[in-house]
Amino acid sequence: MGATTFTHNRFWVVILLGLCLTNFFSYFTPEIQGEGTGDYPPPIEGDWVIINDTHVPNENIVLDGNLTVLNNATLTLEDVVLQINSTSNDIHGIYVDEGGTLNCL
Image 1 (cartoon, rainbow, N blue to C red):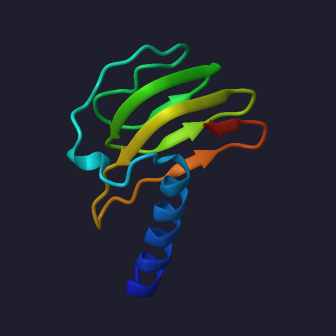
Image 2 (spheres, rainbow, N blue to C red):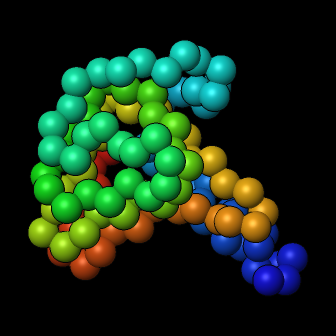
């Protein structure tokens, strides 16, 4: 992957994360286990795939993989700080299939 492609992909990952972040310095805040429904909590490692309607309120989430919302599923993140860890060799992102919904409140 060329430097230009990596920079472009990283730019879009940052933009998408910005839509769900409520606190720029979330990396320095402690992780809190809140209450959620559906496909919550996310896995400790790997991708978080939403196949059921899922609601997560008041949470700091660190994800070491992709976030994917599948067709006919809804993920609602309410006052959630989402951090997606990624390395230059393994770029992670947020993906919403056609018919899936991601709400950031």
